[in-house]
Amino acid sequence: MAEARAADNPAMTGRVQRLGSMFGRFGLASLSSAIVSVSHLLVQIFSIHHLGTAAIGTLAFLLVIIQFGYSLSNALVSTPYTIAVNQGDDIEAKSFDFFFPVNLMLAASQGLTCAVIAWATASPTAALLFGLAGTLSLIRWFGRSNAYAHHAPARAARSDLAYAGTILAGLLIAMRTGADMSAIGGMLVAASLMGLLPFGIAYLRRHFAMGPGRALGAYRSVWKEQSAWTLVGVLSTEATSNSHSYIVTLLAGPAAFAPIAVGMLFFRPVNVCITALTQLERPRMTRAVARGDHDAAIKSERLFMAALVMLWVATCVLAAVALIFFPGLILKPTLDHQLVTIAVGLCALLSLVQCVQTPMSVMTQARRAFRPLAAQSMRSCVVGLIAVTLLVWGAAPVFSVGGVVLSQLVMMLGIWRLDRQWRRDRREAA
Image (cartoon, rainbow, N blue to C red; front, side, top):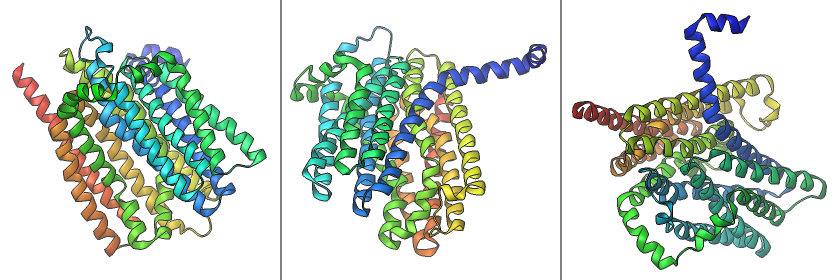
């Protein structure tokens, strides 16, 4: 009966088809990325019940370092590679092999950072394992970007599923046997190795295709044209997005940050999916812009934004259900429920701004407007640092999230102006 009504209503049929197309396009990437996010969340929950206070903090900080490494990889390697190989159909992928040794150097530097932190706060064994985990995580991350760049999202999804499945299996074993920091580091190493299998040996070999000096020489032009400005944007965005974390903890103490941390926890899946869908859509937008099909690029931008907003709405519904009907699953008696509710509301607003902003930002990158984008990011960073500091001093620390929302609004409006200016220039040129 429902099918008959849809057939009699062409408008309804069109909407159903568009929704089906959207889920088919974004569903696999969103689902696999969400599963990885859930696996990391379960690791942190496991650590709360099985590790000491210092180890819990160390593990959380190491996961933050690894997550920040993903952003660095996007700025220095993944985004430039994606844009390079999608400039035209006659591009030879082998000519961009220098990206792989550069990625290996970046991965090794992250591994060294993780090892030093684990050595200073845990044990030499944990340092070795977390060093390997940090290195392998960026090699796997670039593998995902490589798959998306060559329009093979299923390969990236298989990597995510293998990675998350290994972590879940490790946690099931650890729940019976117990685990310390070293064991969790080994779990992350095993997960990264399993996550590399879908990319094959050929992918790993390309990391040794040329020497570091030659690779850096070939990479120099990419650095000047794209990566330097993208890196400025990533660093300023990181400072803006996490300024409330550092400033609240420094000025008001860790207890004051706890309600904010809970609020952020609800929207972590949205952040992960934003990153994953960006990798999926950037090649499509870049190729459309490169061949002059601006209408296709704009359509991709709109679909990307619609998918993120739908994901945001679903997350808000789940957050509301959890807070109203099952508060004991997330909230501890020692937490102020009113402050947590305020934090969730502000984090929801922040997440919505990011969902609207990201597709426009990716479109700006596809047009290779890296310098204007970096300028917008720097402007929003200054606004965010000032606003967050003033709010921590003059109001309850939980309202510091409002400063981040303000800075992201400044960023969103700046990118919107760049996007509208590009569209006006295109119409005038036509």
